[in-house]
Length: 364
Image (tube, rainbow, N blue to C red):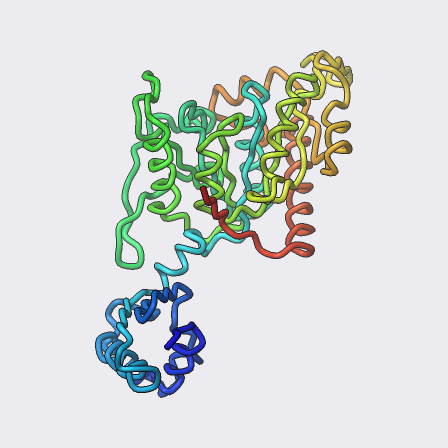
């Protein structure tokens, strides 16, 4: 006799959940993890809560149904699973509408500055925003938000304890920088860094968010793979400067997200330090890193240019002071608000034309 999934499922159609009398097949209680090995079959039954009073009896009834309708020789293993756990396997942040990575091909292009100001601009526009500093080896968000010395607390929600993000300027924020000595380098092997990052995602109470931004490390690394394997990213925003050496690395970053096994939508490019404007002469522009390099790269790669951010001394000063430039009324604040509006448009267009993103499954 040969076992196959539909044979098992058909045998279970007559098994009814005692709470409402409906078939467990109709209720979708059979988990999508059935394994068959000869005359052995194993799968999960999904219950709403671990306190369900019918768990044991229903598993016994399901086992009996397979023995009766298929064969008494089938070795059956049924494991109870619970909805929240199943949802978290698919998406550990089920209350978050859009998850956006902010990436760069190389360091020094102002990616973290763009990420922090984009988060603040989105919050100022009325959206619920979270920001994760995933730059494990160079966390900068605590300083940029002026919360370097803030303690981290736990919060109890839905029957368990969670890490509570710090909230400032309307943005919920977490960073590995809160958990290490700010005056010492973070010396972790890749596996340790990946596990710490997963904990900040899955063990934190982010709650309901419209946008969850992730400030990724520069370049391409195992941290990037950890992120796309842990979260279904809605898309990524790639930050570059106009100079050719930065554009070359940005191309590699775009290619990483566009390759078939990753396949994360690139929402667009941000050209940071697009020109220099002296504080005393706000109408003057000096293209010290080249002109429109981000625009050319966007056209070359089939993506869109989401914004051009000027190089202004106050942006740096605000970052050091923990008061993001997007909070003000300066030309650079206007540029960040325009960027936020373009990102919202890009996300809406992506959601209207592409199916939901799934976590990346990497196989060796």
